[in-house]
Amino acid sequence: MRLNRLSNELEAVTKVSIHRVTLSGLDLRIEVTLKNPTAGNVTVKLPYVKIIHGGRTVASSQVKNVDINIPKFSEIKMEPLVLNVGFAALASSMVDIMKEAKATGFINLTVNTITTINNSIPFTKSDSFKISGGLLS
Image (spheres, rainbow, N blue to C red):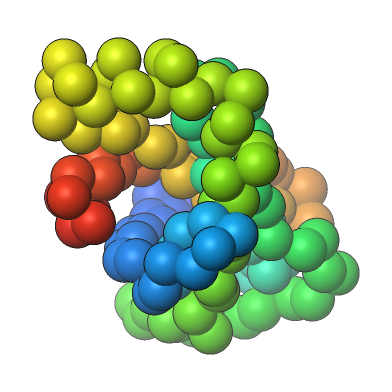
């Protein structure tokens, strides 16, 4: 029961920004901060991050078996990730992307942050971001 409470109370704050635009696609810089508001230490696996558009994964980080200890009542800011969202990965849905951008003025992306707490409890957080004129909101 205590571990289930940890899963409900652990917080992941995700920030996304455009790092650069290249001929191959967009390089997105992703910063993840893990917060532990509880009175107990928590160990989590290095988060796996994936970027989704239209239900399809268009970029993802590497999976690494690294444990991170988050002391009680504290937070850990992870090393920033730079993921490339390649134009080739988006090409198959380019018509839908153009319709979405024309209709709403944005391209919607979802960033999923996935980890495991204390080697037993899965934790997933989804955040939505919008690209508009080269800016994220």
